[in-house]
Length: 171
Image (cartoon, rainbow, N blue to C red; front, side, top):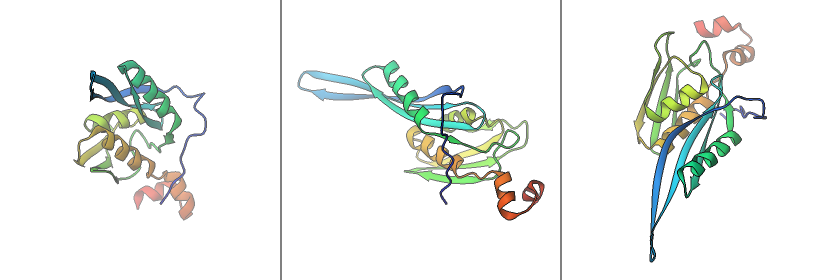
């Protein structure tokens, strides 16, 4: 099911960026070694909007800046309900599979590495998360974003079913 939750405008958002990983790439040529850097960055306003970007450049700071610009171009809106997600979700990207589950208030973000950066950037304060398969940060970020983009807002579900929001949570 494709859900269209792209963010239209970024100029009125206060986005905070988080560096997830930096990869140094070495190219060996006749003249010696050439180093370049690839940085994966997550940006979010900690209120339901998140995006990721990959920047490649000859210097670390330039790679991070390019990653931030790319991240601002592909933002998505995520339904956050009382500091957690509305329901469980599984997503896969490449060799990485992620499982995110809502948690009660006070649990905190129980996630590691790349998943934690994405979940904190979106503004989720209580969630249980598990990654299976590959621990590659690029694929983990993409799988986490895919899982968050598949989440459905409780108000929209209630409207589609013609019932109240409270009844959606009771089952």
